[in-house]
Length: 227
Image 1 (cartoon, rainbow, N blue to C red):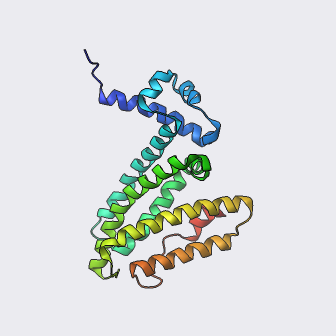
Image 2: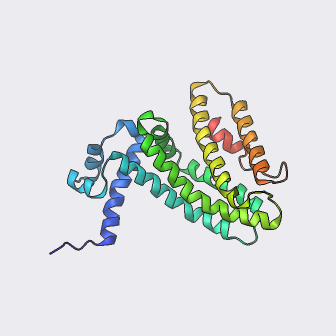
Image 3: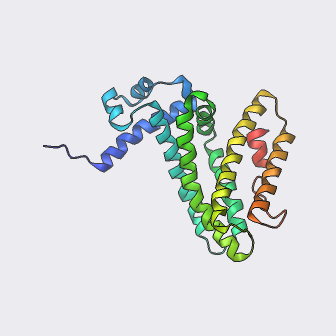
């Protein structure tokens, strides 16, 4: 007789592996822990681990996906608010993403090690696709509202959300490089500020927004990550 799988029990056991993997990412970094460390932390066998995940990379991807799942409830109510303008929603979306990461700084920095490693191209690409999958529908709603309000203007309205999604991803990836540069002392805070000022301008131009209308990364946020 085939064994009946209880979905709730399955989720709880899977989350136990994710909890330990997340803690190891935060405390040791990706390169410094193994599948065996996860097994020891959970008190499980290799067979149990491979029932849920095919590899160490797979469990790291699942940690990243769970973090993305946790972000949705913090963002969706704001996006659904009929009293907010598209400009306000775009600003608050990016600010909210920065605040969400700030609350999980140790985990974000641990994942950053995975992102920057040349040996983890597959993990990086899966994470990139995941972010795009979550982000583009949010931006699509903001774009449609902004065009209707006249806050945005584009000759390519159907493609605008996709282009802005790429811009947000590029900004996030460049932020990782700038953070490393700050740690090494090869990038000044002024260079960081000017880089994000350039992104503000790029967003406004691409979205057809009024110059100076977007302000989504403030000085305290930049100081927190790059100061």
